[in-house]
Image 1 (cartoon, rainbow over the protein chains, first blue to last red):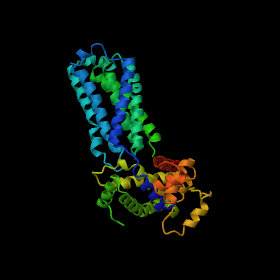
Image 2 (cartoon, each protein chain N blue to C red):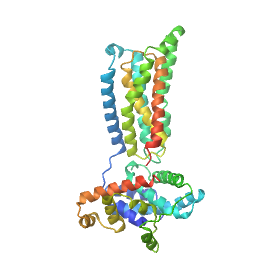
Image 3 (spheres, rainbow over the protein chains, first blue to last red):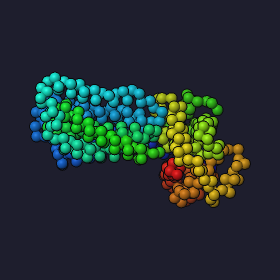
Length: 212
Length: 181
């Protein structure tokens, strides 16, 4: 086919509707989070003492850390979905949640005697944490990968990983309202492993599913 | 033809608000700018020149179908280049040295077209032949025969809306299958 002919067809198709990447992302997060939240509600549900827990720094910190991780990953994914868009600032900002968590861990080690560190780290719910976060993240991960397919990621693995961080972060925020282990030592260990697994899954799926 | 940067961005913004003329101009200018870029890329990978127009057309399709990923407040050139690089790397990986010369019902037509001053590619034509009949008829009418949406609708006894849908789906299918083999 002549390139001029192809151009003619493309020009004729110029009115085909396109919605912005930002809108697709917002939709994906809203739908994915709604499904994950319902799933969370019917399986685990928030802890009974949540009203009291919400007044403690440790509880609030784990929610803030999870949401911060998801928010910075959204900013990164939005850039990765656009060809040629720089990701420098967004990559640096990805350090925000880990840095906050690291500060919380150091603070915890000052506040809590060394003899209790291991108990705090092991906690009571590590197995549930390792199961619930990946499972709750699946609807979000699927929705984010669909939204990214609407974009044009030139680094498919990185875009998939960012989708995994968004999904893992939001799923962790949900799960954190049920988990009674509030110590940063617990969060830094088990939440990190769980979200890391979702991120690796996202990268692997992204490499396969985000071709365009 | 090296009217780039601001020129392309202005044309693309006009195109996004529905101006057909601007869209045609910017696509042609992008195609012209892509050819030397793709030629260099193929040469560096030790490939022949015969694939240039196929890659150019694949990039144009991607530019069209992904134009909502360009942030219209930013320069357009890095965006076009990133798409071109992605598609070139993809094409090189896919073809991997054994590029088959397609012999099908369109070979005669293609040979006839070589006298045309405009440049041709083979891959889009080959994949066009594999589209579902409805989409193929519409894309063929609009692209190859140069019909307008209204002409194509009348000729194919379809509504203008159905022609638009079939055209868009056909282009999306083309872009997808071009990237697959």
